[in-house]
Length: 299
Image (cartoon, rainbow, N blue to C red; front, top):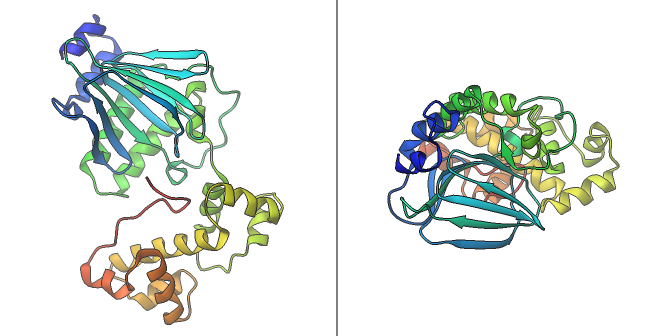
């Protein structure tokens, strides 16, 4: 833990325990992206690098594991060292400087993308977003981060324990001003969350607009801004659910009926349009194809 000692002299500081607990994710060599589980990865750099005008598709929760990071928003800079927990918003232009550590010779951060489907059912966080990006660290947050990282890395995608640990972490961060960007839902997130409550219902854009207290034209325009149409979003939400039914052992007919398709032919055509395969192929393989976020495209 040379990098820990370089920046954190107090072994009782929460950052020290956080870095020690995340030691399994430290990369000794290499650069670029290292996947660790669903929506979680490390980013490594062996040389000082500046990334200009980046814009994230999803907000992220990150932890600097080694080296230093500077995040510039215009003339405002946040300087982060090992053990720093930070939040970056979606849809905001940022300049980022990653600086390798003097002892380790590398920069590394652990990153967790937060998608709309990950957010627990909580009221919007109160108050304004904080000016800084660094999240205050305490022992409870250290425990929540370590539990979530271990569950995501060790468990299956979409696993119950992963969801539980992620909910625990997001509930703990809910009232933290610096973490507010994690809870911003896009219109496609809001629509997906609504229709997933009853995928067998014959949802229309007009009906969904009423539920979300917007006009139908505003709903369609804001979905277009997210890069998805209402019909495509609804179809994908239904097919993702159907795929899970089939992977769990249901017949394609039962899966289709569960998500509102009385016609087997129409269901099969919709399924192929989303996954590029017939429902029977999913059943024969015993597992579903990789699942992307229902509310938008994945990176």
